[in-house]
Image 1 (cartoon, one colour):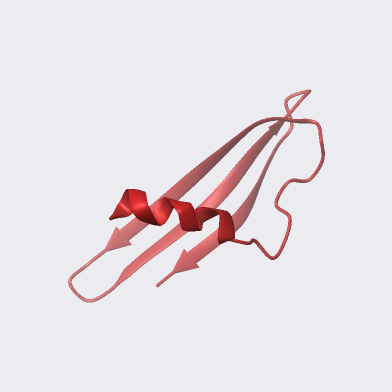
Image 2 (cartoon, rainbow, N blue to C red):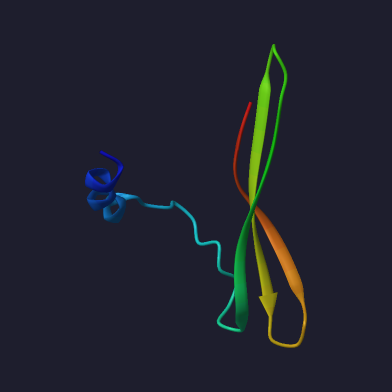
Length: 64
């Protein structure tokens, strides 16, 4: 079922651009989660490393 749904991935749209400029060397996603018996939380950040060593991050999504 998961493989069948992959064809729908091309329909996913992001309403804003997360890439800051063309000097990006690497892009990684970092997800942090925590949960208890009463609640949970998750946050995903994108991390850019630019030529020259500069690093920046942006929040992509969060859920509580």
